[in-house]
Amino acid sequence: GAVVSQHPSWVICKSGTSVKIECRSLDFQATTMFWYRQFPKQSLMLMATSNEGSKATYEQGVEKDKFLINHASLTLSTLTVTSAHPEDSSFYICSARDVGTGTGSTDTQYFGPGTRLTVL
Amino acid sequence: GNSVTQMEGPVTLSEEAFLTINCTYTATGYPSLFWYVQYPGEGLQLLLKATKADDKGSNKGFEATYRKETTSFHLEKGSVQVSDSAVYFCALSEYGNKLVFGAGTILRVKS
Image (tube, rainbow over all chains, first blue to last red; front, side):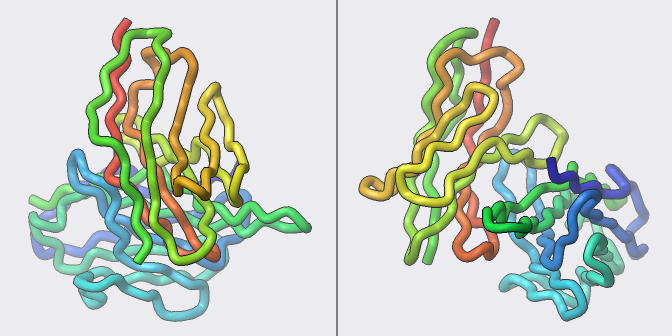
């Protein structure tokens, strides 16, 4: 099945520093990837849609200058949290859209294992 | 706009009990429907999906049928195990666009 990886799985950083999270589709090409944020015991909140070779589309209320997204290839998207603060501490999850090939349509999002960010 | 409503949890069951987690949706068109499962400290895993009315998705003993007339996609399993304890998310997607998630339902299975 389709596999999506994230790196790192957890990171602790000091306030004011920047952190980069990578999301990779391992066995399929993904023109579209999504970045979510999940607070404890809550559902996922979509932050942005990342399209290969173009600018990301951010959801309302998400600061594009704070959460930089780059989708430079069909298998890699990165999320950089700039000038991180304690309130940015969260579980960040990416997903990659597999549109499939042939006559059958899979068109399914597959999720990475998530990255736990703690900002001190 | 599109939305997904799930039954509130937590749902607590004994091992081998029958499971139903209700999910209803509102959509402007004809969405694809999904159930995802999240184990503690992990990301989401696709459990099953259905892309059109009357389709039944199934996996690992779980089933859900796309009911257009009732706009529902209830998750069922005939006999749950302790290892099924997790958070279950119902979701929809139209034209392959962004997923809209329900709030999630915590399932706890006791031995």
